[in-house]
Image (cartoon, rainbow, N blue to C red; front, top):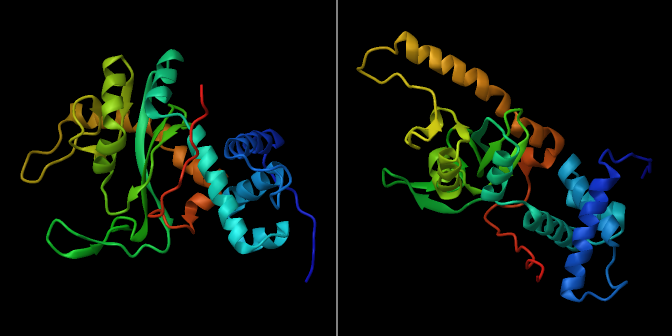
Length: 265
């Protein structure tokens, strides 16, 4: 076996922030000091390595001198404390309004994963894999996100099965809050996959079968809408490029993440 030195290209402030969340969670649980195999700092490093580099839990366990089962448990804890810290959609939209953003972009993607064998019935009455997305031709979870005009992710939803269409997942997680934000003056742009979301969500006009082609005004509006929306749609590229484990998560999305209780007031 060969050992070598490596540099973890995540800011130390990010690791310390995550370690602080883990320390607060240990205090809430009453974990005795020194009873864990890793300190909060090194548990944060372990979890962020998994997000950043898609390092396998086996390799993380070996590198940190812990068992494979402990590595998986520590990963779940890191995911839980970060998830509990994330703002909800209404908070993100209130902040966007306060900062004077001209619009936000609603978009969805499939986070690929393994270990999904849950079955469900399709609209045609046949049995299908609940977590299989026909469009992406892969198993995974449907994630909705709201991006700033420049593409920075402001909010990301919980995962729904991959067989869900974007509009279905958006109705569950995003549209009610986006309607309120649109009424307050924040424009919401989306692609044609959100057809039927209502007039508050601006989507490109679609050519319909057995109907006249789109006129020049509709085509011009589509061109302008796409040119404004395209920068916002880079948000998922930023997420998956920075946190590579989101390209293919090795844990099943059907397994719920148990979030820690919120701190008492």
